[in-house]
Length: 496
Image (cartoon, rainbow, N blue to C red):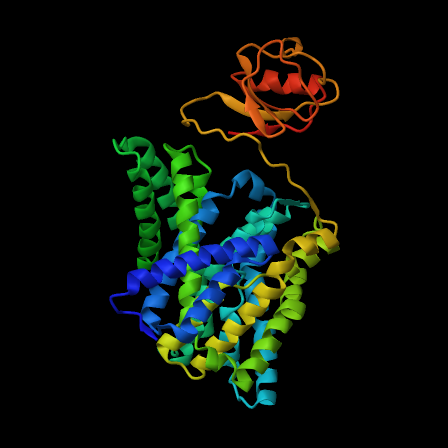
């Protein structure tokens, strides 16, 4: 096997990234989660080629990756979309984690003796706490890679939940690890609950404040080298995490809230920064899943008690624990149909985050730490394999999906430009007309037409055909909206 610290490390890393990207392309073609393939590549290389078992490196890389993933997820989430689902989203992200942890913990505690392991209830609860949150990396990557819309505001709800429930699971995990390792054993449950609430509040306020500071700084610093804006924002991300943790808040929550604030305000060089963080996030996801795959010992996964507990926990989580927490937490919210609740239950994917949290017992050297890690790893693979491959199929089966129209045009202009861009498709009343016959407000132009995949700049005598898509630029948004209504155009895509 190749020593991970040898002089061949750069070659090995390049090979790993190349194989992971190719595997991701194959995963997309066959409908499998790309992140599962990244994990598989890491396991495959760990079998025969690379020896890697560094807890500290794995945890550190995972922490950095999770900060980037959460921030980018928040940055890409429009507040206008999540506003209608903030209530149920917050309840799922907090109460849902607690309910899942206790339901699953009780099951593990009762089941463990049957497979020859006597787990204390606190240890069983620790295992459940590490798995109690849905994984933001998995949910973001799968939902946003599918060209499929979801009814009942399900997509923003699932993204809000997965992006904001990691802090609760993290705090439960750290709390239980501390109790089991006797570092905080003298502190009562009441005090711990208060500390947990304080971490949530401090994390939220700190993330909001640092997000605003990032927006204010970036819009006023006027850097000559535009590439440095992305570096500056990266510094704010790590500052938000570290500073919030320093003042006893939850750094992961602060990073996500900061991303929401930054993403929902006008920002200098916002488009280049969005592109940078999109690519950087994918890199972090690949590296994180590869490292986790390399770290796991495949021989330990095949031990009878690990196989029995791992499969049982994975199935119970999908069939019982997750649905129980969803239906209980959403009981006060009547807007969601039974089918919607079933779908939310099904898309409770587990991914890298539970595996990362399962490293904490290993670092603290708590009893049964190795067993917990291997069970969580195996259960995560089951979740990604079963739930991750059926995200679209389940939405179709429940009648909750619709075809999401994809924009034919991409617009990249400075935020200082106040002009609006919209995309419309020629309807029945416009077919056969010339462009000059279309009545539009002043200061409005049809800049480009997309016809059968080809693009061209039109003239006044250009005849409009069925299926044509028009790129319209205008300074009169309200008047243009009225014109669209008069022409019978209901579906208008705003490009900025």
